[in-house]
Amino acid sequence: MGMGLVLLVVLGMAGFFLARKLGGLGFVLTLGNRGRSRFHRSERDGQTTFNVTPARPSIAALVAIVVGVIMLMNVEALEIIAFFGLIPLTMGALAFPIGARYRQPATITIADDAVSNGGKSWRLGEIADFNVRRGSRINAHEPPPVVQRTPDGGLIYGSKSTSAMFSRALNRRMIDRSYLVSLRTRAGSDETVLSGGLTLDCAEALQRDLREALSKNAKVSTGSIA
Image (tube, rainbow, N blue to C red; front, side, top):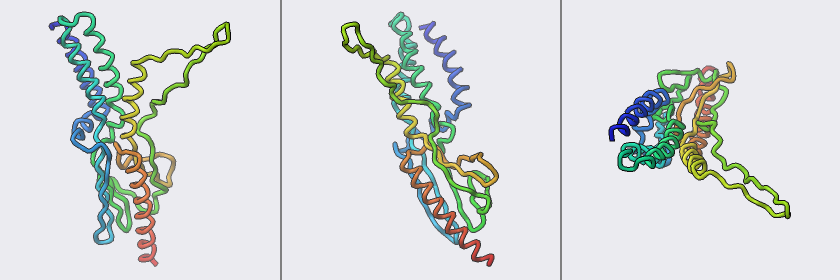
């Protein structure tokens, strides 16, 4: 078990620094959340508050990492087979950071004069729109089948890598819970993420409600000035 332990320590240290940089804490702290994100809207004294709870990450990625670690810890017992544990470990580690950076609870407040989130605020007149996008640019779609024609006119369908198929499936599960709601100001195209780690239905509902609250408060603000 000595060699497996050394390998595990090296991989663990590398994984720790990578996870810390990419938001691994959010991954761990949201494991007890539901599989679907949600938000609660409340209104008081002309102020609208959205408390957002992100979805938990896919447990499948964590299971893949655990399976890989267990195999690598048993090098003496499994011998060369143990090194196949690098496959699920790598697949899980690649899926792990998807959406992790912004996977944390968020509070968004819209008042008569500004929108506030995470210690930052924007005046209503500065805001151009609220946008929804995926938290990863990874392409997790299955590639089209490779078809070759034989000399006699038959068709041969190329085989697909099983590990690649599992990896794409893990990535899709994480991507489905990685959607972001961001704010864009009139100053340019840059966006500020307000909330992340969301399922698409929740992200789109939050976007609609934010737009509605912004429009309502902007009218109230304009009316009070007039």
